[in-house]
Length: 140
Image (cartoon, rainbow, N blue to C red; front, side, top):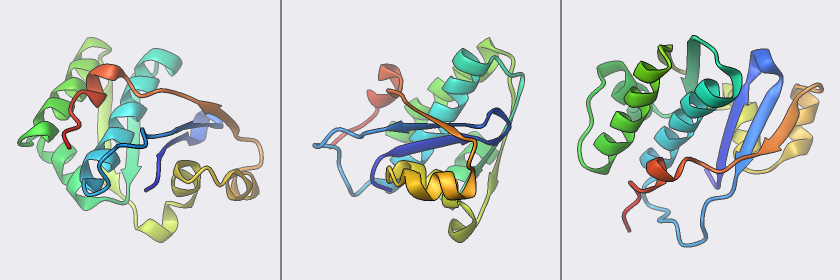
């Protein structure tokens, strides 16, 4: 993962965000989970949906959301997500998808919009900034 990409299939909308240049590159789990949290946040604030199914190719992320347990900075990120889910009464599930099948989200995170439009020609791609409260969890 280079940056963040979130795709809402039913809304025909993809979102992209650049990560800060000084973001630690050795904590892929955090950024994979952050992408899911951003999906939850966008679902609540942009689409006002009550049900959300998320697919992630990172098993640690899927396990964290399935068990609703985390430690260290991941716990703060998980609490942020749970607060949104409770406040907006969103029924949320996170499932594993093999990396080779996660093409659109992967292409969005790499800003490879040509691939995105080949697979999903009607998708609208928008920039976004992750919620600052979620980013506060990043530690170098």
